[in-house]
Image (cartoon, rainbow, N blue to C red; front, side, top):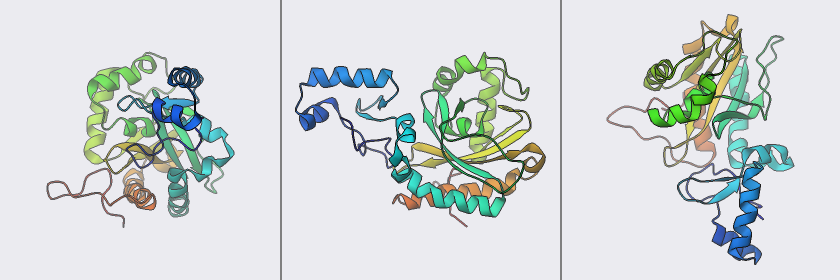
Length: 260
């Protein structure tokens, strides 16, 4: 019934349909379609935009579908991630927000014998991962608390993860200022990751591009990895046909900038 829709990579109504639109397209009563959508939403197969109230296919379903690789965002990101791997020699990933989790939707392997985990379809807490925190860059403190409250109280095996909301907010402020998030020894012992948001035409965050690898290799290369990640974010934006980021107050925004 919601065929052809999906998470909207370009922002706005693209990939989303209201209950009325879907009812007209399938020739069913609006109330019947609404009940079906609620059932699909409970099963994690569709998502509802909180602002527009329109529906779209969930990323979980798209990952399971054979055509998941044909979505505009994944199609735009794949060559960019491949370039990142060839330049930096580490695993490159693309993640999106799925509820209160960061969901890996694309992964390009490196040739290193020791490399990061994180398979496509895996979800992770937002407070202790580079992808998760980068997804939170535009969220106010109240929303950050809402999205991370359950995970902040859960015991972590890696001791470097933020243990309180105030500690998380402090890290987010610093990471927003520099334009990228870094999680080292947080979600997993021995693992470091760096993430940069990807934005749509409305400057809303739609994904995060990140590089992950063993802390022994990445911990001293964070800035070296962050710069091409920012370029990768801008490249993905260009590949899905969005305009380049605009200068703000005489400088390029920290989340993108010009690709080198």
